[in-house]
Length: 493
Image (tube, rainbow, N blue to C red; front, top):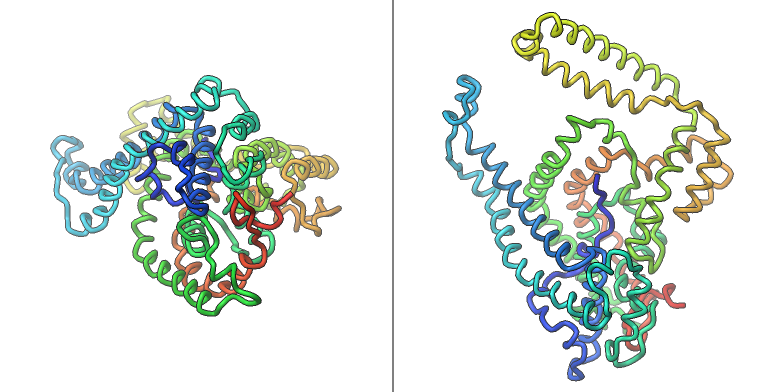
C-alpha cells in the first residue's frame, strides 16, 4: 500500500501557481528586491525538488490528473449512492435499472456544494500546475542537462551539484549544497525544533494537523516574502504583547472557521479511506494489521535539513527489524489465548458452512441464518475475523535477547532514542512507547480521520496557550543570513 510521507505540498502556500510562468527568468531580474527574491528562489527550489520526487514531467502531471479524477469520482459515486438509488425498490425487485432515481435534497446540495466548487477550482489550477511543471522540465533539461529518463536513477545530491553551478540563481552569494536544503526545508526545520524542544507537544500528528500548523503559525510569523516579520525580529527583549494577542486571535478565528469546515472534511476523507481500502479489508484484511511509522514518529525521527525522501529511505529500512523486535518480545499470554479461541470458533463455523455448501450449493445463497443474512455473508465476515486474529497471534518463538538485538538495529536506523530507553529495550514501557510510534495501519487511518475533529481544539485552546512560547522561539532561535534569509539557528554549519 502506498504510504503518506511528509509532503512539501502540505507546507507551502499554493497561490504562487497563479503567477508561475518564467520561473527561472524571474530570478534573473535584478529589479526584484531581496525579500521577494528569497520567496521566488524558495518556491523555485521547492518545485524543483517536488519535480525530482515525482520523477519527471509526465508523472507529475498525471499524478495531479489522477488526484483530480479520484476526488471527482468520490463526489460523483457518493452522490449516486445517496441520491441516485431508491433502496426500498432495489431490495424488493433486485433490479438496479428500476431503482434509479435522481433527486438532490437541499441538505445534500448544502453539504456537497463546497466540494464541487473546490473541485472546479482545482480543475482551473491544473492549467497552472501543468505550466509550472513545463517550466521546471525546461530548467532540468536545458540548465541541468537532466532528462526525465535520467531523473529515474540520479541522486538528489547530484541534482544539487548541478543547481549550484547554474549562474545567477542567487545574486547575493554563491549557492552551496546546504543552502538549497535549508531553503526547501526552512519551515520544516522550525517545526522539528519546536517539537524537539517541547514547545509543540501534541499527542498525535496527521497531515491535517501539519497543514493547520503551517497555515496558522508560519502564515503569521512569516510575511508574504517568506521573511520573519519585523515586529518579531526587531523586538529587543520580549515580543510585543500586541503580536502575541494577534496570533491568539488568528488561531481562534481559524478554529471557529474549522468547526464549520470539519464535518465536510471528515465526510470527504472518510469516503476516500472507505473507497480506497475497502477492497483491501475484504480481500487482504491482514494488511491492516501490518505496522508502519506514525505521523508523529516521522517528525520525531526527522533530522534538521533532512530531505523527505531521505527520511523515507531510513524508515523503510527500519521496518523489518522493528517488526522482528515486537515479534520476539514476549507477548501477553492471555491475549494470545483469546485470539486462539476466537480463531477456533470462527474457523469451525466456516468449516461447517463450507461442508453444507459442498452437499448442497443452493445453501450458499438461499439459506438464511440470522437476521436474513445468508451463508455467503457469514463466511465472508468470519473469514475476515479469522484472518485478523491469525495475523495478530505471536507465532514466533520469543527470544528476548534477539529482541534487544533487533532494537539496537532499529535505533541505528531511526537515530532516535529517549534516555530512559537505554538498556531498557526489554521493558514493557519501552515496548509500549515504541508500539505507539510503530503502529498498526488501521490505527493510522483512524487517527487521520479523528484528527479532523481534534483540530478545532488545537486552534482554539492549545495554540493560544502556547502563543508566547511560539513567538519567542522564532525571535530567539532565528538568524538572518545574507542571500538566504531567516533560518533556524542550529541548521547553520
